[in-house]
Length: 170
Ligand code: SF4
Image (cartoon, rainbow, N blue to C red; front, side):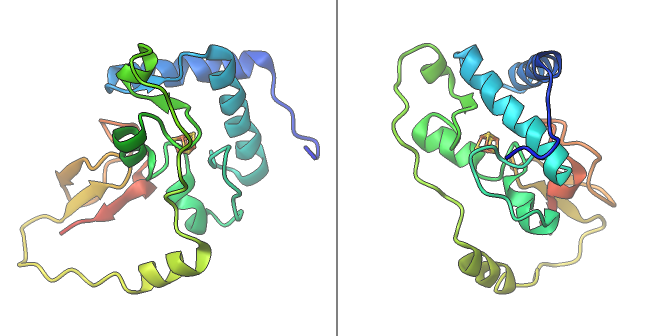
């Protein structure tokens, strides 16, 4: 049920063009089935209205942004899934081989841990134990980009993920 939520074809087209441009400029590719890609992008816009962020259109969000950070598109699992399966979990993003029809996308197993395991993994994440550096190093959880700055950049220059997707690496 889409309680008062609506998206126009123009909005979907605009976002499709934007994401396609950004993806290509960073070495990524949207699914070549434009209608399919746009249906997922519509899902992103619906989720933005529902939750306030681009929660993955193929996963159930909790509505708690902190808890859903890893599944805000592009999610933390996109790149490992592209490497291993040739596509992200939703197949919005695909590799060049898939785009060119040289590889088929099979079903992609869910890489995200169930909620209780995610909680445990977070809790057991050991505190950094590295020698002090003059500047902290920040890592983009989406694409792995690293930078040494006082704080994370507003937007990842590689994959365009927002600041909140960075973690302190050292
Ligand atoms: S990149 Fe991740 S969040 Fe975005 S559509 Fe693909 S699986 Fe969903």
